[in-house]
Image (tube, rainbow, N blue to C red; front, side, top):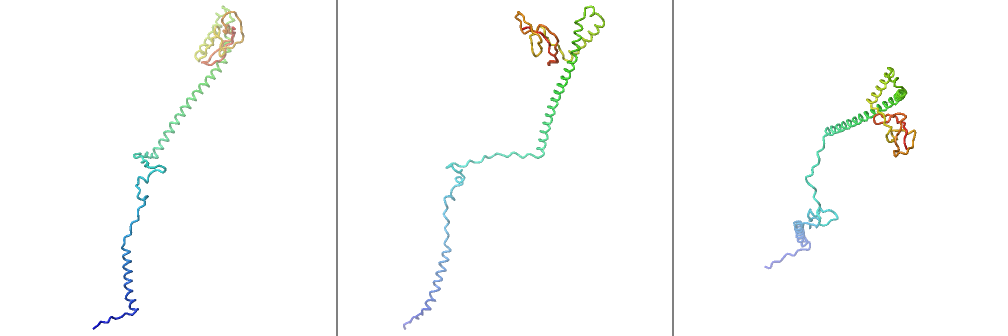
Length: 222
């Protein structure tokens, strides 16, 4: 017998083909998901060695200088040590200032004492001048009297006191004229070769240590 194939209607044909297409679509999607994603190509910047990336700007082929190793920071001082150093420095400064003040005070005290001593000596000098004038006017017989002997002893005592405190007479006659020591009140002219020399003293001058208490009043040869 001849087998007669059943003819399919258009609707059946569509149904028979539809699952096959869905199956093919699903299989294609799964295949697409199974395809491994290719790794992105590395750019030259990402693959550049670390040494090249750390180069200084503006230089080519010149690596960055490595930082010096082994340098250690100084340990921070304790607050107590800083306070001790501050107090020690302040103490040294105060001691130095006190020493300077003491030296300055001693100099001022010495200067004031010298000024007072010069003032006292200057007031005594007229008395000494009068005694010397009185002795110059005495005769030899009057010098031997007890009264004159007593006055002469007082005069010698004053001279001794002057020497002890540092008062000395200024040498004048026969010395070269010095305006710092002598006060020329008269001048004389002579044919001799000696000039600017003191030839006579009218009033004796005195020094207190290195300071002039009174200038000598003299006559100078020109």
